[in-house]
Every structure is written in C-alpha cells, then in structure tokens.
Image 1: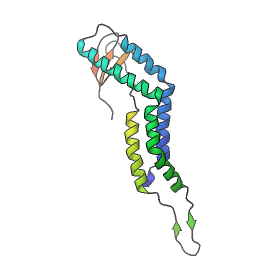
Image 2 (image 1 turned 90 degrees about the vertical axis):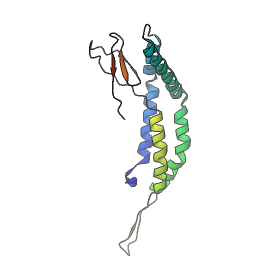
Image 3 (image 1 turned 180 degrees about the vertical axis):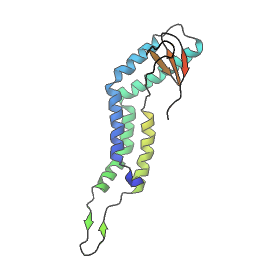
Image 4 (image 1 turned 135 degrees about the horizontal axis):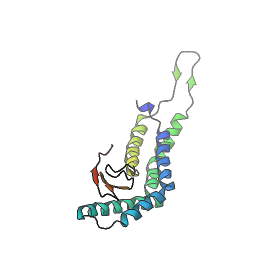
Length: 163
C-alpha cells in the first residue's frame, strides 16, 4: 500500500493549498475586518469572536510571511530528494533470466514523509465554507469554532465539523 503513495503529488497538494491561500489573502483580511466591526453581541459570542480574530490574525501572518511553508520545505526537502532519486533509478532487465529488477522505494521515506505531510496539511488549512441562515436565508454568516452566526438575524446554529 505504501508504494501506492506518491509523495510528489502530496507535496504539490500542500504547495497548491498554500498558494491558493496566498492568492486569496484578501478574503481572509476582509473576514478579519468584518469580525472586528461587529458590535452589540452577547459576552459569550464576543469571546468566541475575539478568539476567531486572534486565529485569523495568526493565519494571515503565517500566510504572508510563509512561516509554515518554510518549515515544511525544511523538513520535507531531503525526503523528497531521496524519493526522486529512488524513483528515477533505471529498471534493469536480465535477458538471460526472467528476473526483472525494479527499484524498490524505501518505505521509511514514505512513512517519514507521511508524518510530515499529516503535520503540515492540517496546520495550514483554514476552513471557510459559506452556508445560509435557516431563518432569513442570508448568506452573511460568521463562522466561529463550530457555530455559524447570522450577521442580520443574529441566529446561532451549531454545525458539525468535517474531519
């Protein structure tokens, strides 16, 4: 099963995810400004909003300064280079026997890379899905932890997280 994993594709997935966040940074900055502009909210909601503001500021700072991506490159580059060397080894065929010598990819490289991939694929992901308010059908919702708050109606709806 481990030989079915292409770590080059996984590497590209992380880089593309990061680049998408970088290209769309203005969306996150706008969300941050809309959270900061909220007034007259209950104390419990205010605490959640403040926590979301903090999380979003950290996320934006991380994306702009490329902190997480830099650490990812530092941890994964050696494994990716070793993987490239192994997959580029030529296949040798012995015409005198039916034996075909195909290069075997070291499973430790894949295991080590998967540990790094799992660490960083979760670290740079920011969930930003939009739903509609059940009562007023407004799409202007603010998502805090696992609660959507309608800006217009003030309705709170607990949502389940997808893991």
